[in-house]
Length: 547
Image (tube, rainbow, N blue to C red; front, side, top):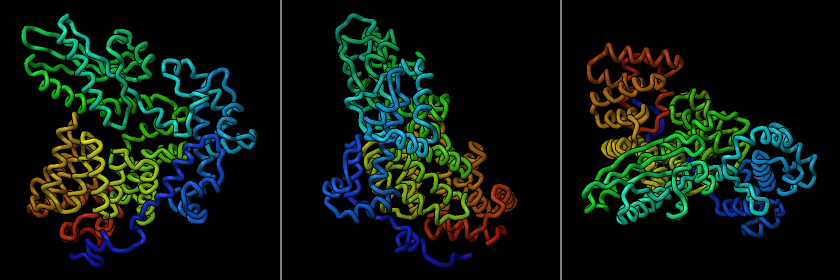
């Protein structure tokens, strides 16, 4: 069964309504200007003068990319900042004080806008913060009446890790010096990761015995600490990541080396820390967000709560993630990670045949991707999510530029390597796809997930190696049975191998999962090369799936 209509190249780059809009520079300038004026003391004329474009152009760009007018966007950001302060409020905090700080001089109107935007009265938010005050006292206060910015609370919620100089059980000066050197090296490496902030105290100031006090003094949520022991010419270094709120060890490892190879030992430890810390912190933050009530979460917490659904890679999970992510966007409209991940979830609904309106979902995904690119163009997570969206849309050149930038900023981000693998798999670069997926596996402390296993299967299918393709896709199904859409090409792999019984069983599993699935829907959803799609379509047609 040959495909009809546009070729794969036409679908990828032909002029249509789904092509990416160029991101206007004036809009980024306007967003930054609004962020720098949390008190609301600015006019549309001020914005126009700052951005150097006409008012008509600026309003058009805001409608296209932000879906609101410039002043309404400013109001949304100021309401988000007010909510953040109310959630951090003390017994002396008042609604009037917070409203006035962010430029809302008409208090009853502020209360109406707040209720409409947030879903509850500002007094209710403040009262709940007072009830929860005891829980929050162990966290550093970030609200400062003289310095608070309209930058969303989400960015201030980013967890801080204090890297303490390693203690030594030996009095030798070389051990102490190595402990300080190692702490500086680990901190320098971790600073490249945007998902958290890093602080390094002076060696004489802090010791790791009292984690809560140490973290409070440093304004940190996690402590990276450890100990060095020396025996003859050998060293043993024990590294631990501590959750300062609970005193629980989140992660730990031990490393051995020789005194005459301290640089080699330092490199091994730093590499191990870089592989372990980001996913461990992310997992801990997801659990922290899960324990809280949704109404107590800012955009960061809602995004953490959504992450397991984002990466589950099936339509039902994508819809659950979207519920949380759109809550985050409603609360803090300029939080780029939530916006970019929402874009990816809309794209997943297209890829996984999870929507009756794929064209609308694709447009929505591209729109949110463009918005997140304006809000934060240099966050590796945002860049990776945007790469996934533009890969879905067949905009491979743009996707490649995005993922290259993400890997340049953070070469340890596992998801970036996974998405680079998928981009190469869709593009027909099977060998490059396998290399990227293998690199993701080397960086990932966990076992390979179903999405990566599926990607490997697709790469081998594209290369015509159907036995390996079937093997990897079977492993993906065992890892996560909800990824039943794997049967779209697994069935064809079985058919190519001559195992028609297994192929028919695979088709039946696909029909049970998605009763209205058709060949045309499958082909329309997947941005693979024309040759790949032809093989899938012909195989499914031979197995009796509806055209």
